[in-house]
Length: 183
Image 1 (cartoon, rainbow, N blue to C red):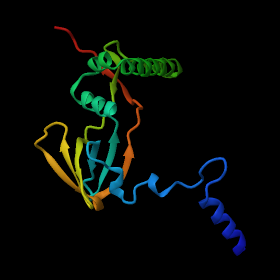
Image 2: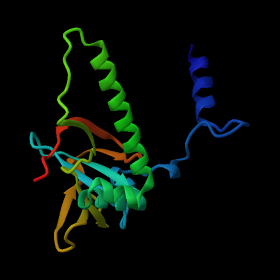
Image 3: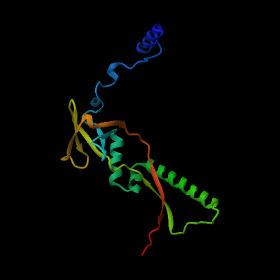
Image 4: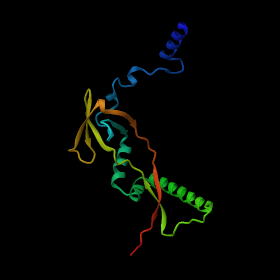
């Protein structure tokens, strides 16, 4: 049994002829703050129940989009980012189709008044504070706010509960909204 474990350990730790099985020590940082570097765009989300924060790492394009999403309406975002208008139209069409299916499947003849229209909105996490890392120390990092460069905060390493990389997935919220009467 001991021999089997030694062979297994040697197999896992030495590179194979077809590629590296193990990751070299240089590929990953040795400390948590090794993932965070000066100049990096991040989101910081605090939790009310405790003193922990979650960190989200953004690419340059993702960060620009996140900032624009907070400042622009969906139509403006769609003009600047064509993918947004395409995905919004897909989400709205899917929602309209589901409404039609629910109307036709309704046994009690329920219908929606004509003053109610399906709408779509881009889901954004506005609770996450966007910023840029200015400095990384041994047990902390300094972040400046994307909204106001004069606002800075220091985040201690031990308060970080997780670090995740932001994806490019767009999420939309569909609903029924009463049409505004035009006076």
